[in-house]
Amino acid sequence: MPFRLPTRVEIAPGSLARLEPLARGFEASRALLVHDPGLLATPWPARARAALISAGCAVEVADDIEANPRHTTVNAWGERARSGGIGLVVGLGGGSALDAAKAIAMLAANPGGCELYEGRNRFAAKPVPFLAVPTTCGTGSEVTWVSVITRLDQRRKISVKGDGMFPDHALIDANLLATLPPHLIAWTSVDALTHAVEAATCSEANPVSDALAEKACALIFRYLRRAAADPKGDAEAREAILRAATLAGMAFGNADVAGVHCLSESLGGLFDVPHGLANAILLAPVMRSHREAARAKLEALHAAVFPQDAPKDPAEAFLQRIEELVSDLKIPSFGSLEIPREAFAEIAKQSEGNNSNPSNPRAMTAADYLELLERLS
Image (cartoon, rainbow, N blue to C red; front, side):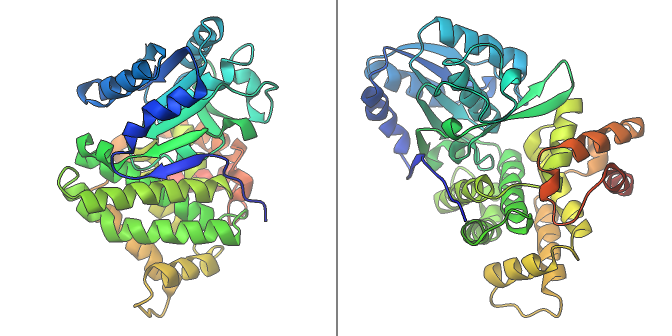
C-alpha cells in the first residue's frame, strides 16, 4: 500500500502570509508567479507578488493561463522560465493555474515542450521549486503529482506525471475563497466530491485513500450548501470545503480517478468545457452506471458519511444524496453544454483511451461511454 505526499501542507486562514518566508528560504533571485486572468479582479495576485519581492525575488508574472491550459501557453512560459533563470515558480489559482505552473516548473529544468513528457516520470531533471496556493475548492492539484494540459493541435488532454511534480509547499488559505462566485464554489466543490468518490470506488483504492475520501465526502455534504449560499460570510464553511478539496486530492493522488474524469477530460480537450463544471454534471450519472460494480464501496461511503441513517439500500441512498446535492446547487444539465451528437463517438473513443480508464470499477469501452452520452442527451 504505497502512499506518498512529499508536499509540506499548511491549512490555515491567512496562510498566504507564509509565502514570503517560504520563498526566501529557496534563495531564488528570480520567481515566476502563475495565475489566470480572472484573479486580476481580486487582491491575491498583488499580495503574492509583493510577498515575492519582499523575499528578494525579481518577479515575472504569467497571467494569461487559460481555463483548460494549452500546451502552447505552457511551453512558451516554460521556455521563458528556462532561458530567464527562473529559480522559483508560484502557482496561484484553481486547477488550471496550478497545473500550468506545475508543468512550467518542470520545463524550467528540462528541454522542449510538455508534450514530450506525457506519461509517468519521463523528465530527467528535477523541476525548480514550486509553491502552490489554491484559490478554488476543487482541484487538489496542490497535493498531486500530475499536471493536465490541453494539446490544442490534437484536441485532447495529456497528463504529465512524476514524483518531482509534487509542489514543495502548499498554502491552503480559505480566505482566498471569499472572492469566488457562488456558482464556482459549487462547481469546484462537486469536482472535489468527484475526486473523493472516484478515489474510493476505483480499482486502485486502498485503506489510506479510502479514509481521506470518506472525510472529504463528509465535509462536502455537511458544508457545501452553506459555502455556496454565503462564500464571503461563512468562514467555517469555506475552511471546511477547502480542507475537503485538499483531502480529496490526497486521496485520488494515491489511488486514481475513473470514468467521470475520462469523460470530462475528453469534453475539455474537444470543446473546452470547464473541468469542474464537467465533473459536476457527470458525477451522478456515471456513478449510477457503476452502482452494482461499486456497490460495496458506495455502501461503505454511505456508512462513513451518514452513520445515522439505515436505508435498505445504502448504495442507492448514497447516489441519491449526490443527486440531491447537485440539484440543490443548481448544477447545469449536460444538455446545457450543447455538445453535438456527432461528436459523441470521438468523446467515447478518447474516454476509453484515457490513462485512468482501467481504474473504473467495471470495464468501460467506447461503447459504454457512448451509451452514457446517449442517455444524457
